[in-house]
Image (cartoon, rainbow, N blue to C red; front, side, top):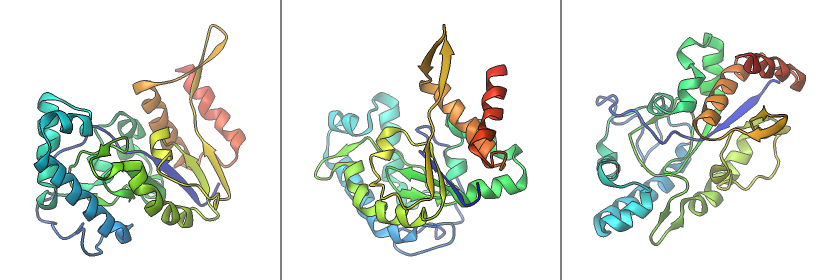
Length: 250
């Protein structure tokens, strides 16, 4: 399966910090290194400015609705978004590394070729940045694709007309592994430009019945599956039986 693309969601939990000496490597006003979808910069900046206005103008109850958080977690989300333009940067892959799915990918122990394949062929649909590659440099942030902003509406509706043509063009002729949760998939109007798309779902058999895997167990399965496919182990759909059998033995 050459020319693959893996569609991914970001992690809710993010690694703080980053490189404070690379402030120009991801500039929202200009193109830059490690900013693959730099044509999204004006739209990213508009959304960030709107988000910061919301933070400045709304009370805690309204912000709790925006972020789906409360208490210390809400305070931290507000803080990182207020500081976003001056924040240090790190790759999206490292930023999302505390997330269960990204930890399960075990990127550090992948062969070099598989690491490169994931960095170059992964596409992350982000609530704040629209589209990212795993090696794009980003600040810490908090805004889910399921959020709704005053005067903007659902974040999915904001991004859909912007990222859909860009994503569709990037998928032309490719084999797409769609690992997206439904809320992220809803931000994309799919025009079927790809050669094939596999919407990946995970189930287990319990008492003879197929049961959908959910929660953190689902994130683990997604991460392990990404680890498998970027190693080019699966050249045909039938080859996925090997992964399925290995997982069932564990």
